Image (tube, rainbow, N blue to C red):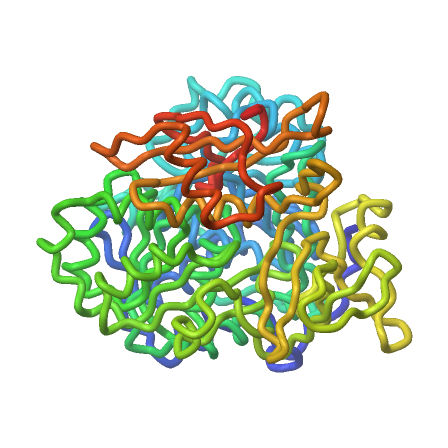
Length: 539
């Protein structure tokens, strides 16, 4: 996929994703853009470091359209690397640092990455992968460089940002000081790929979602607009940058010239909450697992979180009890329940003014996007009919990296000749006012007693039972029913409930065929590296 390089394009010829950084750096050079582990870095510093690293990538042989993999934590270096890859006219993939060596090897080979940007503390993983990746020509390593641990790694090179290291660095490590710091020649247009984001791969190998600069510019602009983000916002980045929801906190914050407070995880919630208080965080993006943790914290009232002005959730609709909890905790904040998928970033959002009126809805189409529901024959259906959700707009992916058959299943001809729209595979319905309700994944539906059961609907009912922290529902083989509904339930601390208690509550809330036949109590549910509940193997 390497392009013959044309002459460098005029710098204002076409908008590209890294313009979000460059414009903010030009307008607000001395403003702190990023806070990470107590280190504060300005827009000008990030832009200068990204330029230097971009030149180093080009010197390593990276050309327009080449892939560069970032395998690292939420750090200053990861942020700088993300922007640097695009400045080098290349395509970026960020891989979660919890990834094991066999899957990292898959990502490197599937993308045919030319350069790996990583951290020394992950050497035990990437040193097993790098020797088995023939396309990899260089590994650039941040952190305390130790060549004795890099046997078999091709052309390892040390790099770290002075700000992130918190100390003076050797000449070799000082941000590639031997290269100039102006931006490299600009050779991409907005239809070129900016990133390949790998899906979780719950079935089969992970697929690389191809996103162009135009895809990501449109998504970042649309979402930050309806969230009413502004320059004064301080946004918490507690989700992995390898997760698109986490990555877009960086993209959107840099678009408006705000400040991103980057944490590695929410594993120590009290410590994160203290940082939120100290930094006067205004934007709190979370997921249901984070809100479930907050709901159990007895000392929440000890933290002054009055600066929070907006809270966001994505995936399915927030459980009503989480909405109640968030409104109690952040009475001054706008609460956004949202829905999306990596293949188009975001589909819908529920305006905060509608959260009481339509609490189980995931809202309306985001700006610059259209949606509709189709039946099994691809024909549009009317209100309150469940069918497959279709998305049209500039956020729709280019396809899956080098997987034409999988791409053809998702991207189909749209209403305008020559365009393609996204068939999401998600079952949803629209009400009379055009508000969307997520029902479930088409490949996740349980067929019991001849009826179709959406696990999300059952999970939602169980989640709204007082004392329930989390729930996951799957179908299990049953000689009589075909499939029986089985629920795995995690209770809040100190709560005691029986299987009969859960079933009794479900009978009040669900149709008979949806009530679980089996209930299992667990101490915790298995999670993916991005905090989503992982159902594989639960049954």
